[in-house]
Length: 113
Image 1 (cartoon, rainbow, N blue to C red):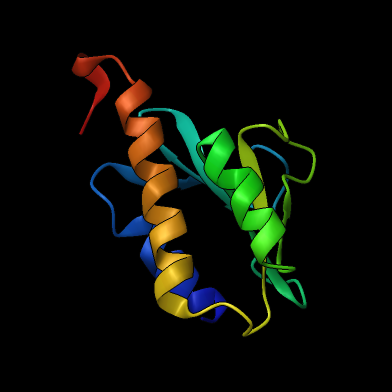
Image 2 (image 1 turned 180 degrees about the horizontal axis):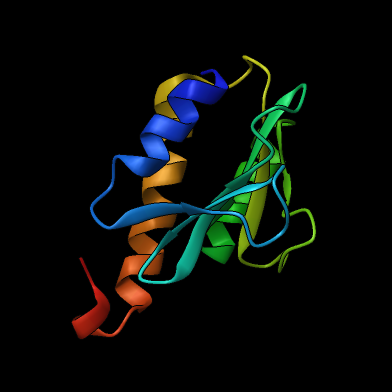
């Protein structure tokens, strides 16, 4: 997965928008005003931070060296994934989708897409 694919994936969800609250370098993808993914799309290697169920987050970190506690985020709920080819694109896509779904589920019904 390259930066263009990651951006397209994140913006492909209903109601998803790209924002830059931390400066021009960090793309923050939000739904209903809440972040579900963040990435410095020009970084090498490419990384993305995603929200995750705490138990699953721990398991992913234990099983995959490319998955680490969220960088500058609540480490209980966020993982930072290095996109270095060690994880299948399908798995990465599922992690981003799960993050989006977790955030949407936490939104008041009036703010859900």
